[in-house]
Length: 357
Image (cartoon, rainbow, N blue to C red; front, top):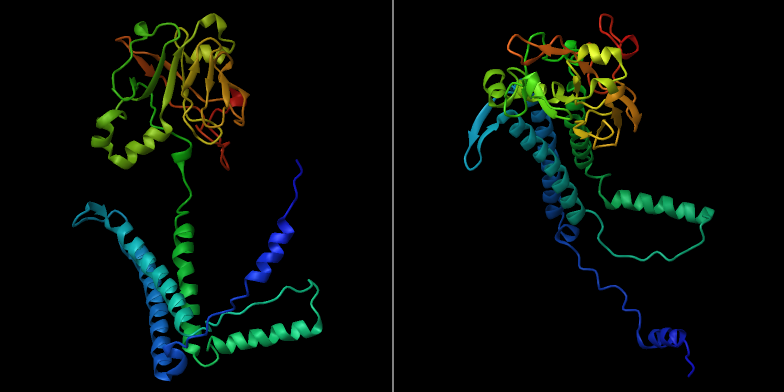
């Protein structure tokens, strides 16, 4: 059996059977034949762009005047932060004004005739360039910007002002330079290590070989932290004070500093990855490795949490611990170095860095 490709015949047959339908007849719009309608449309476009500009100005005023902590109730929603609501509404109105103004301008005043441009060679001749200039000039006149300068001014003002609500929060949000926030945590001498989130203290005698605990400083764990310190401070503590506690066989610990800062093989390290700050919470008991689930940075707990794989560049900081009179694990001091990712001017005098430990 033989087969034949009939595609060319089908194409030729289709070209013979179907004629080019062309474009439907152009139907003039009201603004095309009625100057008063065109004037009304122009005023409406200007009004929409002006609304956008006013909303952008309102955004800036609200950003600097309204208290960021101002709260109130909205029917159907409940208690909200009114600062965020006002910023969202003003920015939304600003963007809506630009969008509606541009659409209304295009629908009522700009040319709406369909046309076809045939393919031509990529190189433009002098005649083509002159034609482009002519078309641009025609488009300029067709948009009526040469006659209705108010549209051009209001559109430019709306677009220019709309950039400010995007730029100002970024610039102003940089805020003052952080001070001790990047260098210190809430760990202090004598604070007990509390299991997160139950808030139970940990007796050294109850920690068995290979045990793993996720802990927080006393007074900064569970509902107590939110009630005493407030939601913002409690969440900030959660991001920087989290610690992982593991009991190792002292004989496999290769760092004298690690032994001295631990208690009978129990060691505590920051859970904040030194790469980008993800929680290092996966402990592999056979290899004694800590794994960050975000980018697979791996830390060897027998080598003072030295980085053995992944993008992290620094070991996890160790928290010095001991026991109190009742046998509970407590912090001897806070971290001797900043926790988490690196930042400018991290090497501050008075803090013990890795190369000093």
